[in-house]
Length: 565
Image (cartoon, rainbow, N blue to C red; front, side):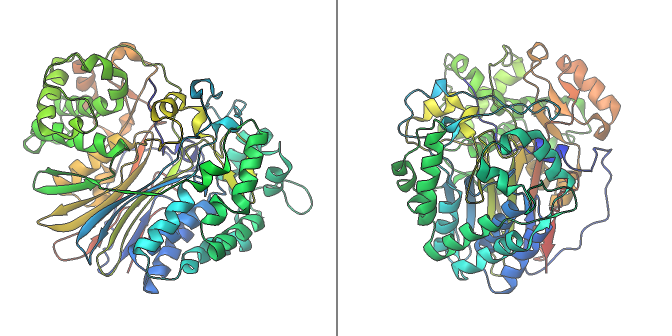
């Protein structure tokens, strides 16, 4: 069984100029007292989000504007208008928390998903693998934009598109990051005339570093969505063109798949932890399940009474094992079936009594063994968190769920078409034909004393680990979001080394050497220096005085930051 791991920024990280160094505490950011927008990438997108807030827009308006602009700035590479979007939203007027799922749907006519061809390579020095039309799923992003705006938007629909359209028409700098990704995909992105035209100038040559990259076809598409609504991309000209092209590339996508897509507004998952109340992305997604389960285990282990994990080797090993349970759950699920009093359903994993049984299993060290067979690899995404002047909070993740435009080489009127089924064949089969594909995204909101104090979201291969360590830092260590992301990071596990129980990847320069050495003695080499699989987390926290504290992911170095007023 393979487990989908999305929202990684492996290629994004490879294309950044920043390098991993020993974590140093930098001067504290100045808090804001009215409103704030925080995101993983896109300074121009974040500035646009703040402009929306100053015009009277809600947190939802600002988050949607930011996300739309992030995609334009990424040239559809690590995020896409044909991708996915998930949101946890606090509405100050009703005092309720809402959860929107606009993830991919599987294709109804795909009867043999296990035979979908595809592979993924993260080696930029090698030829990028290609994929065909069967790898394309039903996108949710634009339907999610419209549904979210209809439910919680204040400003006219057109307003949230203005910045993205302006960036597409006026152009952005073609930078070294985009160039490196394009070099990796050049052959695939040059295969189809419409796609090649996206990346060539009027003289027929490809864009080079320093050029102004314009996206006129994309601007036209976005204007059509403003005028006609998301229906244009699900039952209009764009949808019909997408279906035709995908089918010509061997895909089984139909117009019925597109027009029958529905955004789901589900109940968020909810749990208490150390005098805090969490609301996270709900079922059928698994990211929220992983988050709550890990916090239940941390509570059972009484971490609030223990030294900080990055200072104590025993606590570090224990925390890594707790996080690893969620990461490896799909691979050990069958073995767990035989354990008495353990409910391994998604609903069961949320129960605190389950944590008692799991914690004993983890302590016995009998959980992690055989190597899983998996094609799942890190993918790209963005995260956005917004708090507006009325106290509304939006926590969002959106993703292309592919590596650098994906392997299809398909663009439809300026929109990149990803290949998420090329590495999730088993997940597609398990979900069933024409169904929502579960995802591990985990945006959320935290309350204390009945008041919302934190909105958060994460991306990256190590998104689960980064979420848990950051929440631990905020709730137990009483840190600000910026302080939380600057403590030593735990990355994803290395599936290639089952002999060591799948070692946890870390940047060893962030830890005191004696901590890692002793932790490895306790866990038979359970930690390895490997900076290619980190997670990135952002959050905005309101302190007791009402001030807002955001976070800036400096290591990612793609313009992401917290902007407030």
